[in-house]
Length: 180
Image 1 (cartoon, rainbow, N blue to C red):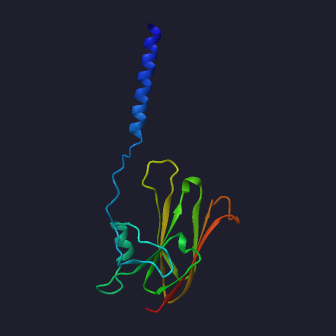
Image 2: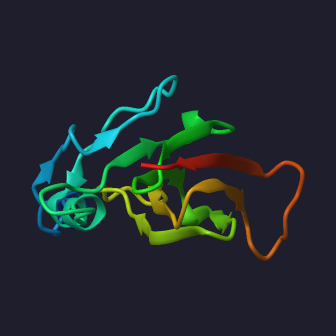
């Protein structure tokens, strides 16, 4: 009788533990902000397979609606890893949003450099919307050429404490800002 009682008690403990673990895997964070796509303010250059992605309302306001003149907004070109090595030509008043996948939980992050005259006006990592351990997110940079000219943006995906190596992933972009 004692043995069956002990086995039943251990079984109940395992069931309770399984219920608690299942309850702990649900997200307790509030749902993300409502997203909006602004196809009129985000465009892809010819030959680039970039599709506008949802942008939170807060970041959309800061990224694409800075007035260039009364009644207009700044145009933003969206680029992702498929634009690696591209030359992008755009009017000097426009901006470029570069989005690259990043997973800092592995120790890797993007080390970026921009040529003189190319301002990085936004630099942020966005964590994944998941509870999975080790899942990667993405990193956004909004680039703005200061004047008409040719500029470079380069990013190396590396572990900073290891230094650069020939096997590191590299993303490079040339931006040609033309007169508006």
